[in-house]
Image (cartoon, rainbow, N blue to C red; front, side):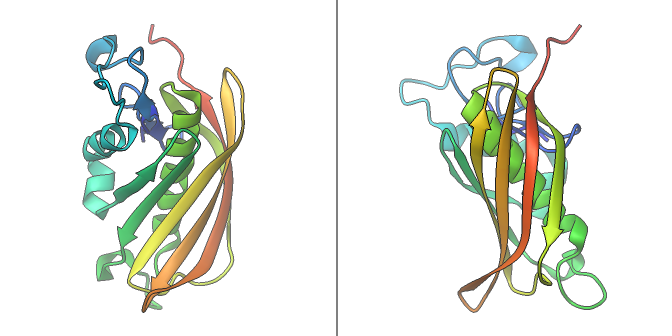
Length: 180
């Protein structure tokens, strides 16, 4: 999935962040439609741009994901935990938890790199069943270079207003190359 560039793209090699819909976008120099620069206005509203990218991701829309925070180093995604997203024991399916971590990783990495990005790889540890009404994924870029960023993410399940850690992820977010 794509995260905003300042240009994040969110997601696995199939996930792109905002920047031209591949990573978070925030820079006026990041690509928009058909590789043209995207104008984010004087404020460079990264969160609004990230939300626009998320709205262009059919899978994210299907799940009901919400981008609730986006800065040049951090991202927060939330997901209402509806019945169809649960497995037979009543907690969130691991694939749903993994999706949310992957997308948050890519948004944070794309925003940090201010470029179109994809997830190169990530690892997730499930530390407890994700029981609750909502999931929250909070990701933070811990290191970035010209071509890649290393990002970590905590995923929480929220029940009756109380957050409980349910998964921890870390990934490498890579700058997208020129299409050719």
